[in-house]
Image (cartoon, rainbow, N blue to C red):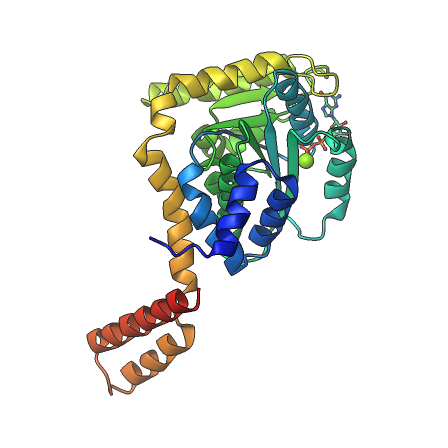
Length: 321
Ligand SMILES: Nc1nc2c(ncn2[C@@H]2O[C@H](COP(=O)(O)OP(=O)(O)O)[C@@H](O)[C@H]2O)c(=O)[nH]1
Ligand SMILES: [Mg+2]
């Protein structure tokens, strides 16, 4: 068991009792990847696993933030609490987008039932996915009924982040039929639900057909059941209530699976692997590589030596906590 300092225990208890300032401080600690943040996640971990985690992904400008805003309003109207994590991997400095989201979300600002955080990429391998997972765990433990993760695009980062969600919604807009074809592999892999946003614009029908066409090809080759498709107009909220219902249906339909050991181990595998890779002693590896090149050492002796270095480092860390 990890050692929980009394300070961390007090912090955890404040978060569990709904203290928003303690929650905000925790979110910042996670963003900064501080050791205190990590200790806190350890202490909170037993309380996680209750929230419905919803991933919202799609190309820039598809209206994801607008959709999330509408979803938040409806979730609150239903008396549930929500946490929103806006992930922006493209640029840590894209203040424009983040500022826009902030202004949009401002109407929820005074509502303690809504907690919103933006996460920027920290430029580390897998760091974004891990940070997002930790943030989701935090909000889950803090008792948020729903956690919504907004991510841009369908690249590798997004696929990893989508795996964190119980239900992933891919947002597409009319006029991008070709894009569906081009990126169908990625999209088909992660979409549990399709939302055709901006259905007020021409071409929604055509886009729906395009998605169905790709789905039927996937089906013929023995793919899973086709993800439901819903049209929405996030600008005025039309269809969003129905979309939320579909998300909850999908979640319920695989309720047992969502909470299963398999899903959780998938989530945590990334976390643990990244932690482990980062703890590798880069200088020691280089030193031993040089010794191998000079034939002073053999590969297995080098490996054994490196394992000893890693072990002693971990023991030092345990002691200093
Ligand atoms: N016509 C129309 N425009 C929309 C709709 N939803 C969002 N938009 C607009 O699309 C633009 C991008 O929205 P945003 O939510 O920031 O997209 P994101 O980059 O995917 O988060 C904004 O100008 C929105 O006002 C919609 O349903 N219909
Ligand atoms: Mg956005």
